[in-house]
Length: 199
Ligand SMILES: Cc1cc2nc3c(=O)[nH]c(=O)nc-3n(C[C@H](O)[C@H](O)[C@H](O)COP(=O)(O)OP(=O)(O)OC[C@H]3O[C@@H](n4cnc5c(N)ncnc54)[C@H](O)[C@@H]3O)c2cc1C
Image (cartoon, rainbow, N blue to C red):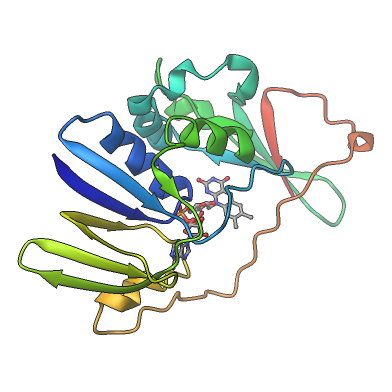
């Protein structure tokens, strides 16, 4: 059985760990620097048809229907006067089994972590990575060290772990745009329940 280490218990790390968990040729361990996975509610996530196709490989289609929603279109509004600018018919890209989906981010993460309780090691921040022959040796800031056959780095857009491997320091590139996610007050009286709204 090959041993796989996954760095980071975000959406990417949890997803790939679920795939390995379902394959008996692999034993997967996830190392997360935080002490828990934050499931606080507050904002949602929009999932494209492609991501649903991938998630269905780990039975996302079995998630209760009352936890997810398939909007038909996205309306875009002016933030200045709330006038509608345009709409996008996102259901055009749907297939029978894979539909554009929105749900609470906490529901998605809860779904992704539910089969991985034993595989996640919290309070583990990676400090060094060494490769010797076919073995990857990983040490953590708490002085623990482990050996694996494969290493997957999925510690987010501000990844420090990638810099431990790469000769060039990897930095995110910013393009001076800003995305803000919020909750629409019900006083705006948007009644079309099959639509997502962007301001
Ligand atoms: C406001 C906002 C809205 C978004 N909306 C959408 C959306 O609607 N649809 C969509 O598809 N995407 C959306 N995204 C993007 C999406 O959230 C990210 O692409 C996704 O969360 C990235 O997941 P990840 O697992 O790669 O990284 P992360 O979620 O950042 O997870 C990385 C994990 O690694 C851990 N970690 C970091 N460093 C270390 C270390 N050194 N050692 C161990 N562990 C470490 C972190 O604690 C964290 O748990 C949105 C992003 C934002 C900010």
